[in-house]
Amino acid sequence: MEIDVDVLIKKIPAINVFNRAKNIALLSQFYIITGGDEYLRNIFIEYVISSIFCKDQEKPCRKCLECQKIMNGTNVDVVYFGNDKENIKKEQVQKIIETVITKPFEYNEKIVVVNNFENVSENNQNLLLKILEELPTYVIVLFVSDSMLKILPTIQSRARIITLTNFTNEDLREIFRNENCLKQIECSNGKINNIYKFLANKNFTKYYDFATRLCEAKHIDLLEIIAFFEEYKNDIELILEIIQNIAESKISAGLNQSYLIKLSKTTTKQINLLNTNINKNIIIDQIPVMIYRSENANIRDTI
Image (tube, rainbow, N blue to C red; front, top):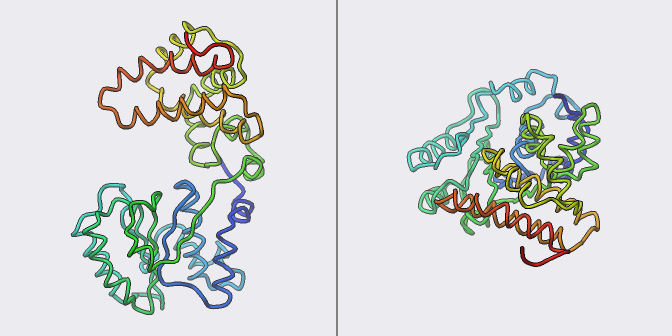
C-alpha cells in the first residue's frame, strides 16, 4: 500500500518547528522524540536526518545520494541503537558513548539514534549524563521513546523535547486518498501503524462490523457476544482495541452518550487487565459480560 508521503510530511506540525530552528541555525545537539506511533516517529526521524545530510537546496529532496543513503540505511555516520525493543544493557550504553565520541567517517556530522529509550534502566541512563553535558560539536543525539515517564528528569532537562501528535481521521483520509481503507482509518486512533495492522488481519471487517453495532447501540444479545468472543478469542485484544477506538472516535465527534463512555472505559480496563494479569483466561471469560453491560448501559445497569 502506498501513501502520499508529501501530504503526510505536511501534516506533521513538529516538522515545521524543526525547519524553523534549522533555518536560523538553532538546532539542538540533543533531542528526545516522543508521542505518535512508531511509524510517525520513524518518518519524522528520517526527515530530520535527511534534512541534515541532503545537499539539495530543497531539503530533504529524497532523491540525492545522501537522502538515498538515509532511506536505505547505508550512511555510516548514522548509527542506530535499541531497535530490537529489548532492555538496553550497560554494554550497549557504553557502546553508545563510544559511538558519540568517535568522529564521523565520511561526513562532517554524525547522528546517533537510540530507539525505545524507555528500555534503558535508571542506572544506565545515569551513565549517559556526562557525555550529554559535553557532546562533541559534530554529533546530534536523538533519544526516541513512547514514555517520558521512564526518562530521568536529569536527562529530560538536557534535551529539546519534540512531542508528535497522532493524525486526525481527516488527515489520514488525505494521506491514504488512493487507497480503500476508510474503515481502518475510522478505528485507527490516528495511528498509521494501526491502519497497516488492521489491513493485515483477514477478519478485520467482521471485527469492525461487530464493534460498530456495539457503538451504535444496536442491541446485541449476550449469547451472541459470548459466541463472537469465543470464536475469535485469539484476536480478543485487537477486537477490544477496535471497539475502544470506534467508541472514542464517536465521543470525539460529539456523541457523548453514556453507553459510549462506559464502553470506552470498559474496553480500556479489559485491555489493561489482559496486559497485566497472569491468568488471562479468567479475564477473557469476563469480557463478553462486561461488554454486554456497557453496550446496554442506557437500558439497564445489571444483567
